[in-house]
Image (cartoon, rainbow, N blue to C red; front, side, top):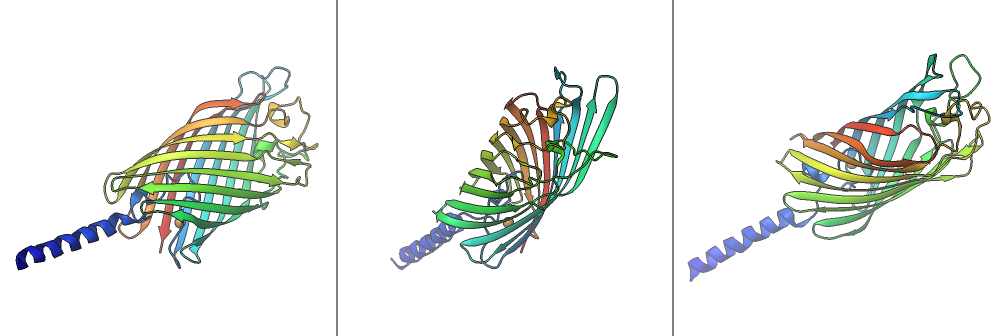
Length: 317
Ligand SMILES: [Cu+2]
């Protein structure tokens, strides 16, 4: 009898330990962070800090015909270096600060001569609070309220000219933007999954008399934990980009290039991504995500989006 009681006690104790080990959603596994292309996906425990760096490289397809326009863009690339810091004031509230540096290049042609534009510098700064809405054993719901401060220039000029570069080449929105979001996270022993809806809502009009369109982004992912260090993910994203309101009279003639005309702005993009997360034993993380557009419906004549690669490093302590 004593032996049976003893083994029962040992059994229930080890069952309790096992249950506890998997009872709550945790960020301390490779897929405890979302694919690296997702921002503001997790909170931290009280007193924890995190630093992050991402390099995002996006390519756009040129426009092959632009009837009525003198010139057309043939290629565009956007390279973004993003620096982030997170700090958890409590288990319920994490603060996040993000700054980025942009480097945009656009090649153009009028059919006979080719030209090129470049803009680079600091983008808009964003500060956000991430808070608990609810959490269950293996799931969590997180709310985000962020503010984007217009530190990025909307005055980037063409080389040797007083005229400004097209909207897509400017480094910021020029407006104070509100960035609300909601993130759902779930995980079991082998898998994790999540979904996020996030928006960028512009307020007012910038100094150059326009405001960029609001942006809505809905994304969902599934990741598989392949080992204690490595996970692989797939993700589906839908983006709605509003069209530009107002116009900058110093950008140049509307019919000079499709990218000067606000009629050619806004649209919907659906994309698919594949990624990996690697968690080192010392807490450092490296992650890579590759995104390809699956379908896009853009208003007017615009460059279509091509592939995006995001490489990131994160470290929490
Ligand atoms: Cu973090």
